[in-house]
Image 1: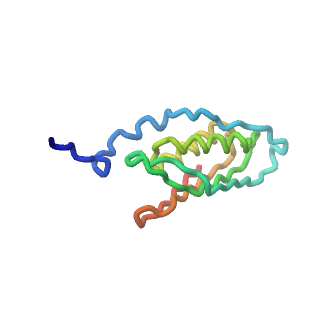
Image 2: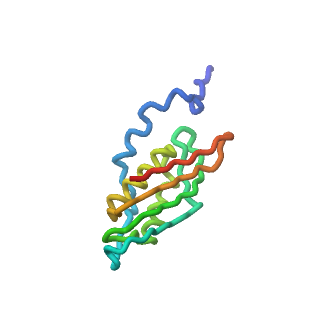
Image 3: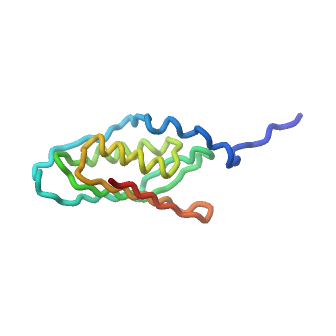
Length: 136
């Protein structure tokens, strides 16, 4: 009996596998808290090197360092909700570039900062490192 070939390593099979990402709703949303120093700009920077997500082709884990830098307007990111939000990605198959943009979009929607910059650094895999920067 002939076995079907394993196409999990087929680099040509990427078309459409991320089309659901723009509308993806994360179960633990980013929450906000009031910024009481409105009008006095300051940069806020959060960093974690514990972000994980899955490769959408192999389902193997990808490991990331994430830096979020923003200038608040009326709202701050509530950190416990951010932690829970980021944990949700450990079971989601998503490309690096889409992950950075999704996090950026969700933060913009949650707290509407004056400025926002997301830097996502993927750990080396297969000899290639990746750094994705999304900013306004």
